[in-house]
Image (cartoon, rainbow, N blue to C red; front, side, top):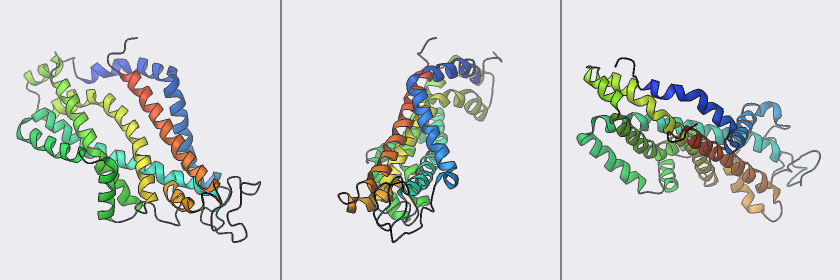
Length: 289
């Protein structure tokens, strides 16, 4: 019985899962798009042709040209440069907020599923109450309470998404608790901490990984919405959402101001959603080679 830790139930599938992931067309396309935006964000200082906050009063709302491929905005700033730099705010918000949601939600869900009782009942009622409020409404309320900034927006998004991970971690924990290797570990007298961390938690990772990937797409949309409302990244710092907020006033005179940030949001969300769907298909335990 000593050779049946939970990790053993997951690790043998990893090489085959990776091969299937690379062969999955949706995951390959989504992963490529996600990687593209990650590289854009990392290499923004190299790729951006202009300072994203540099003003050119001689080129106000200039259409796309050889000098400004994506045109300029209402005060002559290069739209291409601001779109490139804006990827940093959106991706950082997506990754940081989901990391916060995982850090808070997974331990709570694991504890609720493992110990049950009054703690499980209390935690689930709080989670149900938060899930009853639409995500964007809850994020707006939290961001408005904390104050307008990118950091506060990430905290608001992370806490708003957290209930999803609590419920998912709890469900996966309850499923793992019914497995024989967990019962054997408990029968051998292992501590609760060891059983939870070494035998239960590893088997929740695939589902949490899929949800985290899909959650990044949701977080990008939510951050853009908060920035659009003035609760996220603050001007003049570049952000896709704040760029759309400004561009709405010039949608007829300068449609390129809204086209490129909006297209960037759509492509980034599309990429992470495709990647998440591919991961779900690949890591589905019912999938057979």
